[in-house]
Amino acid sequence: MSEENENEVVETVEDATEEAPEQTTLALNDIVLAANIIDLATQRGAFKAAEAGHVGACFNKLVGFVKATQKAKAEAEGEQDATTEEAASEES
Image (cartoon, rainbow, N blue to C red; front, side, top):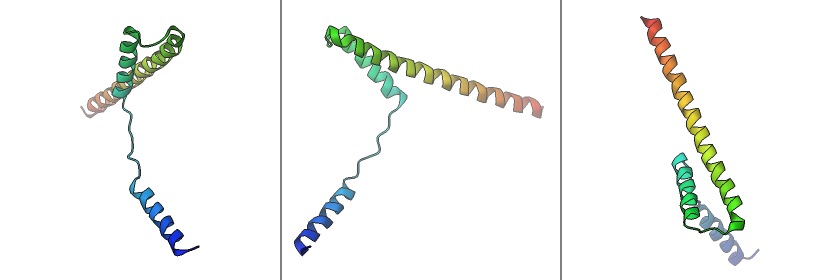
């Protein structure tokens, strides 16, 4: 391998490490926003009739996920409250 090729390889590796992608996060609010965007676009007629089924299925999945996540979160908070109340009553 010539010196010129070696330099190109080293520069390429250095460029790749410097341009590492940022870690992307997705919050529940982002999913709610996506569902709202789909709803709004549907109301404005942005989709063709043939696409409506797929768009509706996607929307239903997003809404179902949000509802299930909120329910699980509420149940987890309820369990934490119950544990805290039990501990407080045992101390009395």
